[in-house]
Image (cartoon, rainbow over all chains, first blue to last red; front, side, top):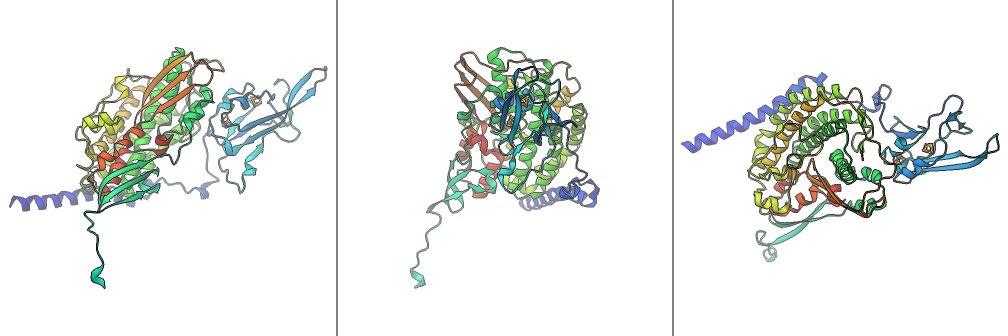
Length: 159
Length: 373
Ligand code: SF4
Ligand code: SF4
């Protein structure tokens, strides 16, 4: 008698526990406005990333096509993966002194692990992270980028 | 001629089969060689190394600042805690006292990471048992934590937010409000987890009494974290060797004595509550001050050996550094919790069915990159 009672009791508890779970899922079924899924490629226009999001490394230029990089190479030394290559040329300033100037700032996005050490250690704040995160390309050569723009010069007073 | 075919007696023949390396329930590239008698598991032999990257060797050619970003990639779900272990070891070696603000922020970040990690574990544990619903519910809530991380640290998963001497950046102004909102939200939503899975009859039948581990065995295998505490082994580093601001907050070490899959499950669910308690105590009184102490650009540790342990989401994570006074460590060793927990898998699963192996593996919650390093 007791066994039969326990048997039915266990069936009752099993059904009850299943019902509890179904209640949660059922509640969301009837409250579709509570669903938080983002329709990603469709909402691309409205998508807003956070200001600090590490998308890729960029070198901001002002409207006179000037950057702030002095080609000191500190970022290159600090990068753990050899992602950055700073190519400099020696130029002669107006008063006859020899100085290093940036020729090419090569950044290999495919090797970057987004540790943030380059941005943190740069003494002139010449590089920042942008929010662009859609990096898919068809061949990996396209991931090697030159960050300084064509014909750009060092900003006055940033030496 | 049909009579001549000899059907082997399945009960007496042991067959060995491979589970993994590409198997969804091993949560990564782990290969288990199973010896089976029928459906009963006789022996489990884990074969690791499929995602070995040689991180310990790589650290020997990197400076201490650079090493931080590698530790993220061990147990990527407790990236903050792994970073903290290296930072604390370096700070201990150099005898640096970090500002109070750093300690509190680190504590909050660690606990947020712990909640996020346990949420993901809950998702995948439910999925291992065949409940796909859990996966979506857990990820929905984890998303909120990842948003908080992204706003302050810039990354969602592998943040590299700590550096020797403090933090990489100060908190985002929205941080406090967002964390508070999250706590309010998650306190409401956590009972939903219990309704969906903890009290579910299918889950209880599959988890209760499965994969028992006694306290003695747990200690001798070195099982730490929620897996060890599920067997009654009091091993919470936050309690026994406080670091960060853990000595200033009140929280309980969640302990259960049954030692089965269900108790390991419940320990993690309760730990999420404890983590919320810790965050609540700290979030309103983050002291003002600097977010980092000024460090030399090149850190050289004095000659000697240093060890620091922290409580990662899966157990005790340790960093052992041998320094010869150079800017790179001479040798660095990571004590990863998952490796020790995995070693207990054989004992846990002996005599159980294959389906139980999946449940037990899920309750151990291993992350393969942490095992292989
Ligand atoms: S980006 Fe900054 S650290 Fe790198 S070379 Fe230019 S100035 Fe130096
Ligand atoms: S974020 Fe790190 S890996 Fe990437 S370029 Fe900067 S230093 Fe190198």
